[in-house]
Amino acid sequence: MSARIIDGKQVAAQLREQIAAEVAQFQAESGVTPHLVAVLVGGDPASAVYVRNKQNACSKAGFRSTLHKLPAETTQAELLKLVLDLNNDPDVHGILVQLPLPEQINEQAILDAVTPLKDVDCFHAENVGLMVQGRPRYLPCTPHGVQQLLIASGTVVAGAHAVVLGRSEIVGKPMAMMLVQRGAAANATVTICHSKTKDLAGLCRQADIVIAAIGQPKFVTADMVKPGAVVIDVGINRVGDQLVGDVDYGPVSEVASAITPVPGGVGPMTIAMLLKNTLTAARILTKMSGIAGR
Ligand code: NDP
Image (cartoon, rainbow, N blue to C red; front, side, top):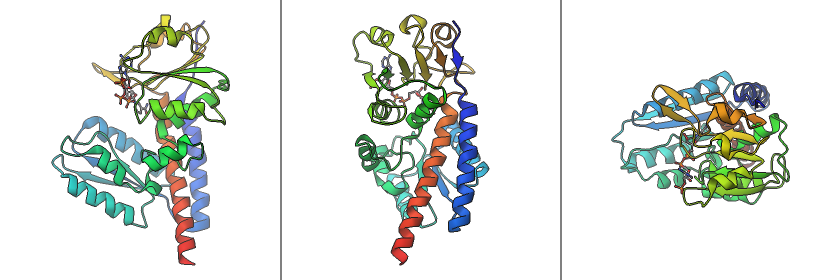
């Protein structure tokens, strides 16, 4: 059997088109252009590419986007001041602090300082808490993108056993929380695996849906996948001059019923969901400023 390819590029393009139409309508009704501000500290080449891709997607969908590029030696106080200024700027709707930050910076303190209303990455404890309670303000971009791929591929998630590999705050943990909620692409029975998990391969073999987010090239091999399972590969690993996922794509696609490629799977979805959150933020903040001005 050869798995169906879940084409994240195509699904993301459709979503971005839909979001662009919503942005145009929002603009016509409110006179406001949703504005995402990215903050990039230091010269990490991969981070620069991610930020550039996000900015390009913004401008194509009718958003305003601004980049604050700070030197690698930026201090905690300087970065904190910028974040607080952006929090207070009524023309800014979404704030994205590109990770990783240089080692002299306390990453958590910076992320905590972003006002929850402009936290379009959904990293702030208030937004994570709302999501866990099933009443989200924003949804974390990568897990939300995965859910959209599950929907687009017609995967039955309700009642399925989903095994999430990885427990990071950005991907694994929120992914598992979202799959266990009531709602679309959810209602799953979820197992979370990490580096201390016993018999990870055995657990993986029980999965109807495998979501790999561990940052280990080709970690998920064909013998770890139940025939007919759906495999979503979040991993992006640079091996030589190639980008490979956490899944051994060729052999696993002979066993799975559907699979995401790397690149062209989850990656483009993350950006599309960031745009969605930024539009939501612009809506929320514009409504609030209207109420405050009455
Ligand atoms: P982290 O490094 O923050 O977390 C990795 C997780 O995987 C940890 O929970 C760790 O366990 C677990 N892990 C690592 N090695 C093993 C192992 N051998 N066996 C079992 N568990 C293991 O990574 P992220 O969540 O940030 O990213 C994961 C991958 O997804 C990366 O390749 C990253 O580049 C990619 N990514 C892709 C995105 C996209 O848009 N497509 C967005 C974000 C990330 P423990 O907690 O025990 O240490």
